[in-house]
Image (tube, rainbow, N blue to C red):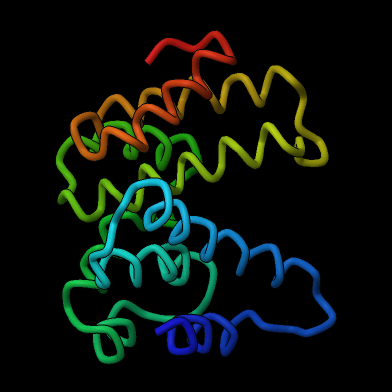
Length: 171
């Protein structure tokens, strides 16, 4: 499963001299690890979707390709968590907040783990060019998305709640 997941990603983005590829793979694996180790998720389709969650956004892989390799359920979950890259960033962020409560339980799990991974990553290392204010704004926005995911997985939600509490952000 891991081989199939990463081979689709590598086909489109892999360049052995580009360190961003390692970082991208760590995100995919990190989200799946959070689901399995911290969220207690054993559903193979959810874990596959976690490994693939940014593949369509970040590569030239299509949903049809995902479906042909991983089946319709995995492709649907990935589609549910994929932003429309043709929209402006602020609109994509607004739609994440708006759509979060209406996603399938499986997609909500992937979204929760992805938010948890991203917020932990921001706490570990502020991206180049990001101010403390921008990081805080991201936490506030992420809390709005997380509100729409309530009731999905108590363990992951508690970990998010702790991160928000540390930042003084209400959930």
